[in-house]
Length: 80
Image (cartoon, rainbow, N blue to C red; front, side, top):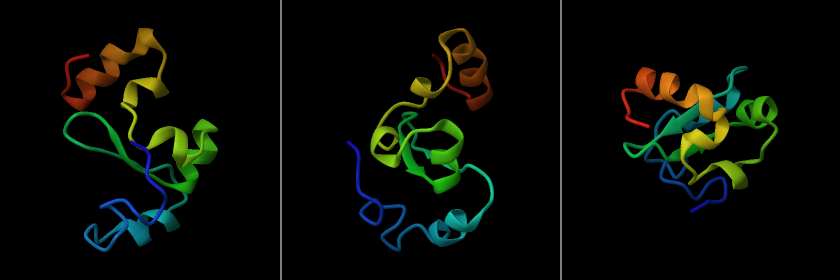
C-alpha cells in the first residue's frame, strides 16, 4: 500500500532519522522484514526514475532485473 510522504510510520516522528535521510545526497530505501519498501527518498526517486507512489509498499524485487534478484536477495539475507 503506497502512502503519501509524511503519512508513513517512517516519517510521522516514530522514525527518528527520516529528516536526515531526506537530506542525504544518496538514494535511501528502507525495507521492512518482508522486503516491502517502507521509505524512499528523493535521491531514490531520481536514481530509479520512479516516484514514491510507485515504490512505497512494493517489494524490492521490482527494482532489479530478474537475473540479479537472487544475488541481491542473498545480500539482503532473503530467499527470492
